[in-house]
Image (cartoon, rainbow, N blue to C red; front, side, top):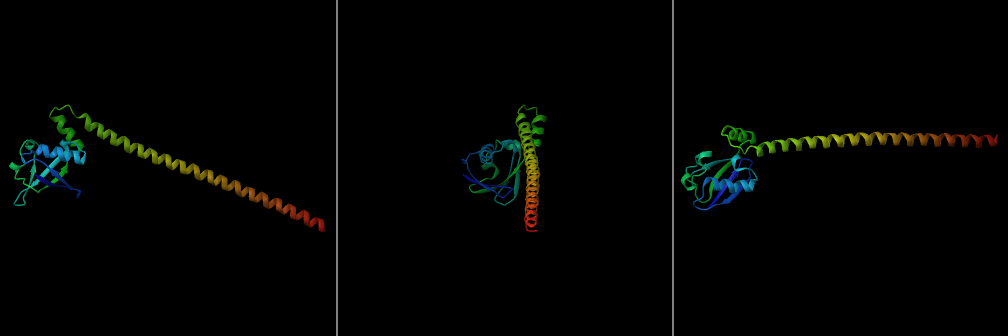
Length: 162
């Protein structure tokens, strides 16, 4: 059976599952596609009367057919925030919460590295600008020196004629 899953951002996923597939099997298929944990996925099923129904976490073992899902059914996909998943796992006493912490700390470290890189680039630009200004000044001093020397030469030439 083929089902159409619309991610709330506007992306569509066509998932192929067996006729007797469970909600969990569909979520696993979707999770590999969107590269997220199954725990973060929230499905909203649309039935024949076009009413929508949120599929709860405790319904993961239900068959899609029992929820009214048929060939070419349309569903919506939402995502739980990683912090919410972490809190849920912690309150239920599950030990697999390191992955959420790792994701959060990894995201933070990437953000920190990006800011450090931008700061370093800014400092490099400042140094380059200062060096450019010094070179420019040195060039102007040389030009001035050339003008002074040219002036002395002209003065000597004039003195010869006098």
